[in-house]
Length: 118
Length: 253
Length: 130
Image 1 (cartoon, each protein chain N blue to C red):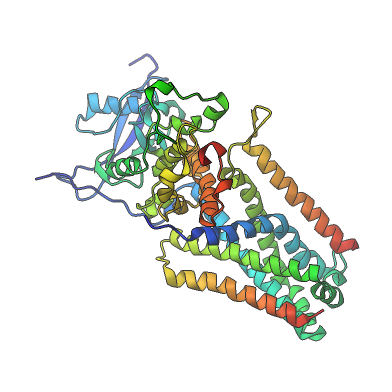
Image 2 (cartoon, helix red, strand yellow):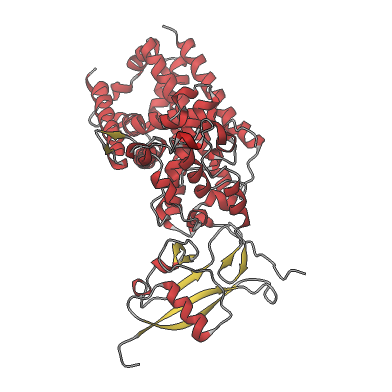
């Protein structure tokens, strides 16, 4: 039997799964629900000056990069395998689209964070 | 009968390959006593109503693994499922899902048997051993590492439960992978090396999506989902060449 | 001449036939909303790189009712992901025995659920007071 290459994608899926299980709920709550309306948190909490300062720091860059990248590696792995569950014949083409999307987003995030500078 | 015997409707799948193009359901009225299992209901149908009804059974006590059926859409042992729990509603009995139907409630299990034979389901010793060396010694703690996985009765409820097996019959499947882990985790066995080809394959542990229904339906508490998913970690460690972290430690030697 | 004619049943709609499978599909579908959220964040980083006006436009979009609704649905879905993630996490771990007693799966899941709660409090505190 041929050895599967799943371990690569499963590792990324697992890391993203842990991160999104720990941080997903609170990040969605803050950035998508309470900060935009200024409830329990001032709108400035995710305002331009503050987010720029975070994105310009090494710590902030790493956090932003890891969150966006791993959330997507986790999501595309699940989405790809769900295609099979839904009876859609998902071969190498579908895998390339799914994992390719995560790769492009990962590179884009890194690039943007570098452009934002220090 | 005036002894208070109740009657329940058992709707069972019928399929006779010599005359049917497709399966269909047939309903029987079955008088039953309070302690009757679904298996006893089927036996009443065969003995008294329609002797052509075909189904597998043997021990009547949940140890032989023969009487697996879909009962109201759930994989269950007929001898361990009781008519009183469905009364007054109808009980729908079907053959185990994800297997080809041979006749009525009998499914073809050759695929499973072949896979069982393919994982070296026996102790592969670490080193050769003479009779003079005596028996293996094993502590209770070492035994605990594999005991629950040795409880499998090959009833195939987990295969009927597993949608990944249904979607892809190439998948090795829950019971066989649990048995594979049973041997890997046994301190007497050489562990990883003998069976890693099966584990690391797409059809091995990587066919599992952790739906988890297999462990839910297992009548013996084998927990095949645990056996398989532990080995995803082992397979990953093996893939990246860090085998010394394989667990359980007894298996990695 | 064999009289055998095995009948293979189709898998169409398999996940609609059992509540267990339905919950599995809901769990898996959480990935879609998580992916969309990650793209929203990525868009935010992009706007951040374009300057204050661009970022203000991204922020303004977050305040619209459709966005708030999306994030509520995403929140519920990702909470279900977090709950189920920790619930199944012990299946990937070997049997743990400490002091002769087996650590139960629920105990391990409990650690995970507690970690999510703790991280949520910590991140909120950072957002509010740091």
